[in-house]
Length: 496
Ligand code: FAD
Ligand code: 2HG
Ligand code: ZN
Image 1 (cartoon, rainbow, N blue to C red):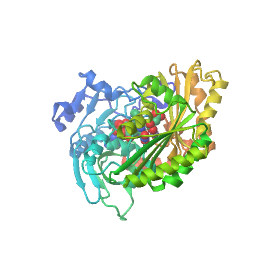
Image 2 (image 1 turned 45 degrees about the vertical axis):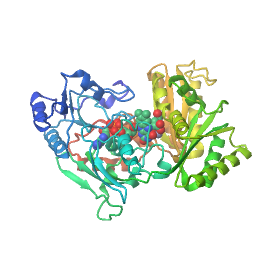
Image 3 (image 1 turned 135 degrees about the horizontal axis):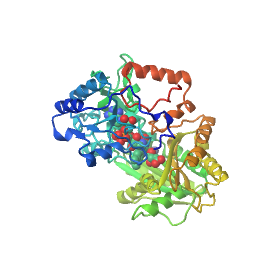
Image 4 (image 1 turned 45 degrees about the horizontal axis):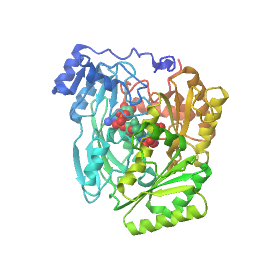
């Protein structure tokens, strides 16, 4: 990260620098040695300063790992009174630079808050600490016949608090809905040290403003989420996965129409990726089992979740037969068992990791109406070719090697990624604001699911009006009047 790209990133002098007295106070609150990591343990400290993409790096001198909401409250109240800036951190898998400090902000990690508080086997309502890892929760629920309503490639590290703070979407939103529907209540700690329950773990509650909704997607700017109550669905008895090869993006849309019509209530995921994504996965990930031998420009991964295997198999057979007879797909493979199904999913889920291994990786996460989804990738390829940065014939000889598209087709969410020989100002300038202008032209969103963080904050006006941003600032000042939580992010810089 270079300060010339983000000129508003000068350290804000309103924030106090950390002193030995501050550290002594933190140690008096969190008694365990592992709870306060200081600069004399650089190997332990550094991972908290750097983001998953290794693109954003801060210089925090202390990481706090409280075990209870009461400890979070004591720490936050102190930081607020002393104007010490704080960045809340979950699993640190965020992709927009929101989870790491920009300068010397204190990292408050939820890692040590990882207890399940309660589970109601009748309603499926789970209440747990915010630091519980998504996959751990899902495995725990699997033993009880339930599942988490969201799933993402980062499930082994991301935390439910981080998921809620970013309003993560993921691979099955199409079926199980967004966290705005499944999160029933949460416990938060405000900068002044108040511990507040935002709602109750009930399906229905029409008493007062629904404040929890404000915290879903607030990216650590309003308060620290310390616990979450979430409605979990029954784990499906029957799961089918298929991968299809399609020759055009129009064809992909046709498959989607068929899937909605013929698979309807059992459709649980509809993901797509282009052939360069598949090639990168094959190149970087060992033992990838490609389901078919012919290459097509696009691939679709479809999953069904149901309660009756025979019924689902029959529906899927009709669906695939219709696609083949109508010539919509070039090739298709149906997973014969759970190992094959996991193999297909792993192709889709390791695209991000493969892109990261390419060197410079420019990542954009956007929503546009489905018919325009892939044309955004093509427009970007044209643009980069026109300024001599990219070879459209796929030779990967330009400084921009690949411009790829994949994502949650069912949600109109494209992940546009560029890989390059390294980070460079001229590449940045060729992409932005050009890309944001295309998104605005299509009436889309500059962030569909990853959030704003540091990366998208300066461009918020491409998705939201001035009046909207003003209201956001007013809300921020209600919850965090001293602005100690996650500074420099989320809001466009104020023009001086
Ligand atoms: P972090 O990265 O630690 O934090 C993210 C933001 O939330 C930061 O602003 C942080 O300050 C804030 N925060 C974290 N915890 C709290 C808390 N308890 N209270 C208040 N604020 C908090 N995202 C998707 O939406 N869909 C995907 O399909 C998806 N797939 C991914 C796949 C991979 C391989 C990777 C690396 C990332 C993926 N992501 C995806 C992005 C990321 O995993 C999600 O945004 C995730 O929800 C972040 O959770 P986390 O615990 O890692 O949060
Ligand atoms: C996914 O859907 C994640 O796999 C990551 O949201 C997307 O790497 C990306 O751009
Ligand atoms: Zn995604």
